[in-house]
Length: 369
Image (cartoon, rainbow, N blue to C red; front, side, top):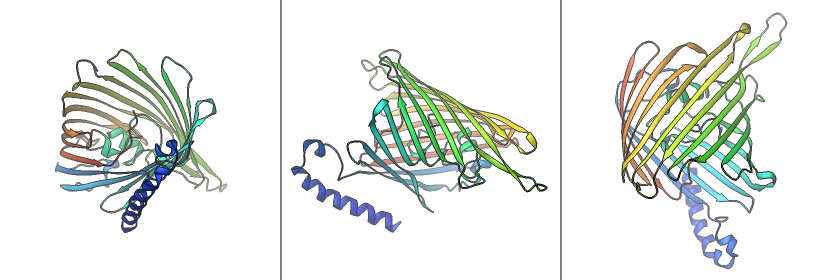
């Protein structure tokens, strides 16, 4: 913790000194932040009421009545004319962790971009969004049960291609990451340190009218899930998991008449096929769908529905609902009152209330659209 604070203080001081010298540089260099990275922080305070009956993915949740869930520090800067660096450090009450840290190369031939480092996989739309920046006090149940509390992430490399189609936007991403361990991600487990995970996503965006737009996406992930040993021959066999996803996001905002009115509907579905010992397979699935309606300048309300099975058990499921009302004094802070109900696989009903408060200082970068 002390190291992080000293590092940030040093960057701030040195950034100011560099800025004073920037007057002698060219206009292109002045317009960038080569020597003075954007530094920002997001704080996430949460109040919780009710009795938890945690599922497998939430077994480690503390359930404290009042908790500073996380402070996320970000450092973002243009490295040179071809690359940008992004670093996100998550600090909670017990740990300091590099959440993401990667270098992205733009302006490559054939509409390509490359990324290398540690990052959240581009599977679905929701996985890449950090929890403090979502509308919810939690993550959707299907995300927790299949990807864990932190989502599908890891060190690796990615190549992105934007289709040269003038009338709508389409992007293809192919990624390879170090396969996670079962303790980090319920869908995958790496028997060997060199096991890799492959992820792909095709994303398309289209303006339907001046007020409506639509985003469609399809995703896939392939990686190891377990290892089976043959005691007779001494050989081993690695089993694999295959995940497929589809997502849809529909947005409305009338730029002429409804300045303080907006609507969003987003749905993500996931299907899993998991190899098991003895030549068996487990098929399971899950989804979540939510709406968000802005009804006044600083007010939003929304509702989310969850249904999910489990990666290793397609015979049971849990179902949930979440509703919220959010007050946003500005784009830099919000206060959200939320209620959640979950029907666990054993028939237990869980009822929780949340008060989520987030605040942002500094020029935090845009979230995935």
